[in-house]
Every structure is written in C-alpha cells, then in structure tokens.
Image 1: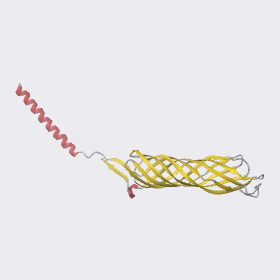
Image 2: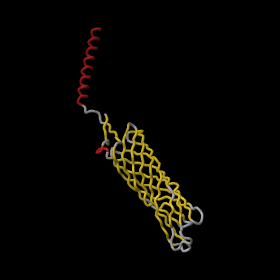
Image 3: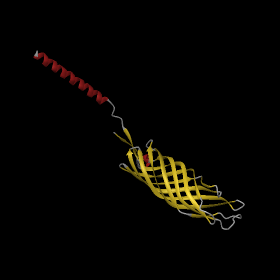
Image 4: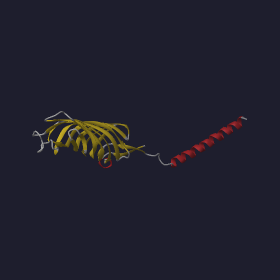
Length: 242
C-alpha cells in the first residue's frame, strides 16, 4: 500500500512539472504586456478660446449721477504659451488676445460699451491629480481697448470715443489632455482695470466738453478652449510606461 502511494505521488509530481514547463514555454511565446500611455506636459502650445465676458463698471459724467454700465457679451480669440512639468506640478507662461462684443448698456442715458480687444500675459501654476488632468491658477497683466457710444444732448446726437485700460488679471481653471497633443480647458479670469475719461463731445453737447469718467471695476470672463501642444516636436509630448 505504501509503495502504491509513493508511486502515485511521484507520478503527480512529474505531471505537475511537465505542466509547469509547458505553461512557462507558452508564456515565453506571448507578447509583452501592453504599454500604458502617459502625458508629458512640457512644451509649447497654441489654440483658441471662446466664452462670455461680463463687465461691472460705472461712469461719472460732468453733469448728473453716477450710472452703472454693466452687461455681458461674447468674447473669443487665440491663446498660446509654454509649460514645464516638474513631477506632479506644471509651471508656465501664457498669453492671449481676444475680440469682444457689446457688454455694457445703460438705457436710461442711452450709453453703450463694447470691448474691442482684450489681451493678457500671465504665469500659470498647475497641479496634476492625474497624468491627463491639470488644475491651475494664473496671474498677470491685462490690457483692454473699449468703445463708449452715447446719444448726447437734447437732440440725442450720436457720440463715440475709444480708450485703453490696464490692470491685473487673476484666475484659474482645469485642463485635460484628450490626447498627448490635443488639450481642452475651462477657465475663469477676473480683471481689475484702471479708469479712463471718454470724450463724448459733439455739436449737441449742452455743456462742452461732455466727458464720462469710466471706472472699470471688474471684468469677469468664463471661457472654454482647445489647444494643440507641440511637446512631441519641441521636447515633452507623449511618453510611454510599462
């Protein structure tokens, strides 16, 4: 009986060794495990942005009260910059140039305001909770050119003037890499700009000159964008990991 048990055990061990050898041989013939793609954020990028700009302003005419001149309008343009990745953090510099639309309206005084151009140059600091997604903050300089239109005097004659405003810009957003090269973003910017005096003098002005001191208190911008990242050509881009 003991002899039979020993023979059975030896046979089982031999069969197990043969099976293990076959499995190892099959494993040697299999392809390597799939490569898991990742993202390198270092590199230049360029793209477009579009969204809504809302202004909170008021103006002081040479006669009368201090009317508000508020409203929202479309704003779209181009954006570009450079990122440098350090571990889970990204630092960079970015600039953008946008074209606006009618954003402010004061029906009581028949005054309208249009943001003609808006540009910023900003630094960015981002954190990567995942390889494909960045949450970032941004801060820098902003420049705006706008036009004030009004109907002036008892005859309601049209008048117009264009001025530029400067100030600081702060904001933040989230950016996601759909591919190593195509990124999408959603961001918010807040700008505080300086005051400028608009000259609305015309023949119908009852007390020349007709001036309006525009206090550009706040500019809120919510926009989305798509950028193409050139990391694959100028360093960075797609990398691979096992």
